[in-house]
Length: 487
Image 1 (cartoon, rainbow, N blue to C red):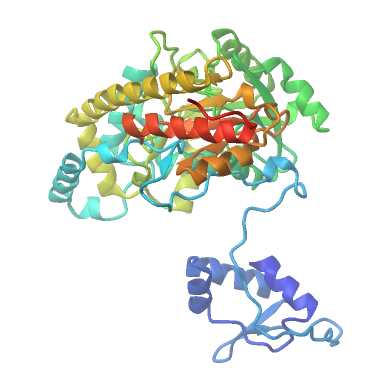
Image 2: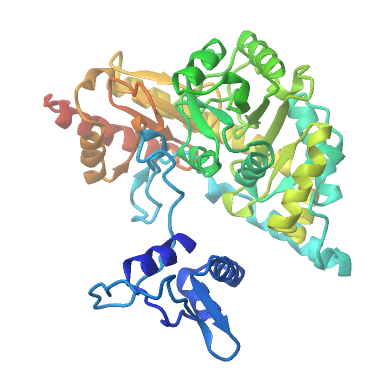
């Protein structure tokens, strides 16, 4: 907002003496907190762009030298619109948005959107009971400003959960409850990264985390992933190739249990190599275990943070995929020396994650309702995953490559037989048949797939719809490649 107002003044679209909207009205127009507008106005006054006098409101200040620039033609008032994250490198592919469109579409659409759990099968009645009980127990303290680190009861339950499922053994004092996993990433970036530092991310990776790290003053360097996970031996070369010193790497972001979007699982050798590299360079490894509860293979490696990492790993988890995204509760398991600085930033950014929801979640876990829900969902997802894989192989056979089927709620599907056909053409033809699939190329910064590749989520689709959706997708691919229709 400060940059927009300054640009409007410099261009003459706002002239000395022009009145600015009241802070309350502008906050409503921009759909932001009034505090944001007030602080922006204060900063603009400090830089001599605006002036404010009691009773006369906030106005544009006179320019130094007294000469006002010519007024630019204007038929409508200037618009101060919310802006996306800053373009850190002038339009490089690293920062281009590549997210699926919002799911505002007819209910008849067969949507293979990834990252969406089976919300229709969530035990709403049992969750409502947990909320009812939490409100029934709530005293003045529970209804007031609770601890920024989160509910003690919930932190104890989280400690128990990660001990049982991920082989971690944290003290509840080292667990911070956050507004989803994204807030944990944001706080860690604010805390650990300074101008001139480097953040290493996987390539391919999720564009949201690229934007989180990209809003810092750090250089964000993608490092390739293969079937064993992040190519640790390539970190130094990739950082130097971008003109930076590997000694300035402060964060390394990884998804070792189910790499996004490939689904690869980081091997034991790579895990040990990464921990050694991080320790030697004084860097922090940020482990995002976003699909930690759902695995479909007999062998399951523990969390990276369960290794002997000498306080180099921060483990981040969330209940968005295991329960429902609107809950907005995540958590970070921190090394002891990061607890106080993390808590300080958490306290000043949002004060606390809503306490009643935390108390309800703690009760939901302690009574066994969470474990029962995970067990039911694992069986359901296993069934839907199997049907998706069977249907894909039935229709595409050897002209198909799939990765990521060992865990998580999506697979990465490469259509080998459609090489040379643009992904967006297949996407459009599938959409015309009522099927939504999501191209994967935009998640790659370098070396996108040579063949059309798609993320296909299956968690939210019943078996019958999966069967129908894959058949329609196969018809779309046949049309895209010019092949005859199936008999």
